[in-house]
Amino acid sequence: MRYFIELSYNGEKYHGWQNQPNAISVQEVLEKAITTLLRSKISILGAGRTDAGVHAKQMFAHFDTDIVFDRSELTLKLNSFLPKDVAVYDIHPVKKHAHARFDATGRTYEYWIVTEKNPFHNQSAHLVYKKLDVDLMNAAAKELFNYEDFKSFSKTHTDVKTYICKIEKAVWEQRNELLVFTIRADRFLRNMVRAIVGTLLEVGLGKLSIEEFKQIIESRDRNNAGTSVPGKALYLTAVTYPEETFITHG
Image (cartoon, rainbow, N blue to C red; front, side):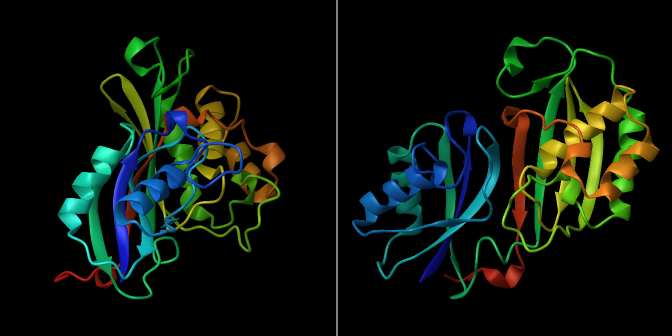
């Protein structure tokens, strides 16, 4: 049987989702926990690979096993076994060839910014002291809908076959003390959200015009885009799949 694990994690202490040779990852601690509890070597594959320090409010990963188990009981045991910064919400039975990464139809990220010193958001939001023109940043963000090739915002030397992404939402909004950027697309390139946010901040600070922002996208050159903002303020908030992926009666 194939199963999707639905989980969340605070990425502060992890070197990203994906297994690393010399650093701790979320994938590693989850694989160890489920392997121990099922007493069988289990490999898991995530919906994507978040970078070091990045958080996930909703992440999915799949694994295969012939072992019969009670899903609620295993969820409870995993949460007892896992560190406090990783939580499992559910284990879903899925179709035989369902794939946590390739079957995902959409992913949503949020980036959190504070514009005043805030002791409660030292590790959860990025501090920008200077005044930001949010209206201008939103006008620039709307331009993202007019493009599909986002090589300018991709980490260089990655092994992707295409830089094409379909962005469905990109908006800045104030939520109490937080200025939140929400972006949704069918897929994202490595470092893409953090590079987009860094470039939009330059628009908000008056360092870039909207026309220059468009020229950066069209250049397909990462060197022209803004600096990537820190990973600590980035959250994967949703991963969506076709309804038929899940076995509802299982």
